Image (tube, rainbow, N blue to C red; front, side):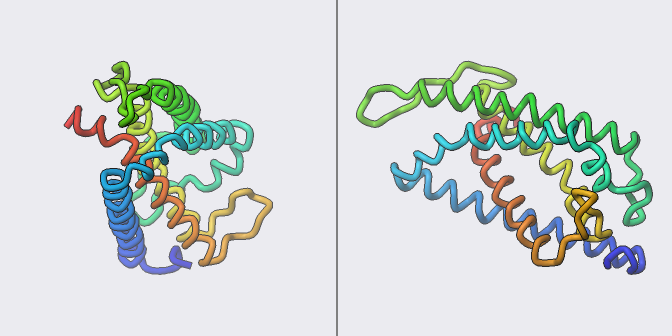
Length: 205
C-alpha cells in the first residue's frame, strides 16, 4: 500500500495521480468540444445532461443514507503529511451531499429548460437561457459548481487507493484494476461537466 511508503513518496504518488486526472480530463474535454463544434449530430449529447444531474443527486442522497461508508473514505488528519482540512468527516460528507443534491437537481431542471427552449428553426438553435449565478444560465452554472465540487472530493477517491479505505465498509479494499476504472470514470465526469459549464467559466473569468 502507498500509505506504508515514506511521506515524500506518498506526496509524489498523490501528485502523479492528480496530474494524470488533469491531463486525462483536458484531452477528453477537448475531444468533446471538437466533436460538438464539428458535427451537428454530436450536439445531441447535450440532451443527456439531466441524467448526469440525477446521478449526482442520487449520490448526494447516499451521503446521508450511507454516511458511515462515506465517512470512511474521508482522509484522516495528517494523511500524506499535508491533509489538515478543518472540520471532521461528517461535516464534509454532509455539505458535499447537500451540494450534490441541490445542484444535481438544478442541472436536471436547467437541462430540461434548455431542452424545451430549442427553437423550431431548421438549425435547431437555442434560445438564451435565463440567468442564474451568471448569464450562462441554470444548467451551466450548476454544472460548474458540480465540476468544482468533484475536484474537491477527489482526495477521498485517492485516499481509497493509497490507504485501502473501503466503501461500503462490508466490502474488501478494491484491487488496482477497480481504482483505474474509477479514475477513468472520474475523468469522464470532469470532462463532461466542464463542457456543460464552459459558458459559466467564460462569463465569470
